[in-house]
Image 1 (cartoon, helix red, strand yellow):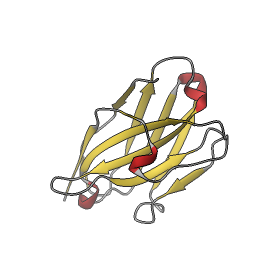
Image 2: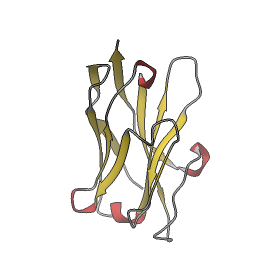
Image 3: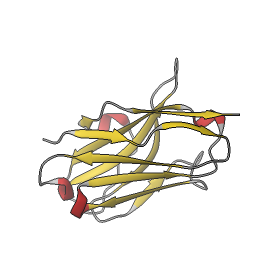
Amino acid sequence: QVQLVESGGGLVQAGGSLRLSCAASGRTFSSYAMGWFRQAPGKEREFVAAISRGGGTNVANSVKERFIISRDNAKNTVYLQMNSLKPEDTAVYYCAADAVSNIWVVFTARSEYEYWGQGTQVTVSS
């Protein structure tokens, strides 16, 4: 079991950057595959990026040229660096975790994650 808390969201102008952080409780963070999802009002929660226990990544095509996911197991934290932000990036961003034994696996579907944070709002103005 793990508790997740996102931070780093806020208001930014188009073209700007933000770095989101997801802090996990406990001492088993390295046992979890991690992911970032986002949800805009009236829309389904969509996949943004994921990272395996070993650091392998998968980033959605819509953001792969602009967003970078990383993790620091010593700090029990996963990050989402967002560059060249656009108004369409406006959403609540959620951190997710799932315990896996395979060090290389990454998950891209909502149903594959067991634990979720409460989300952090990102608003990009034009």
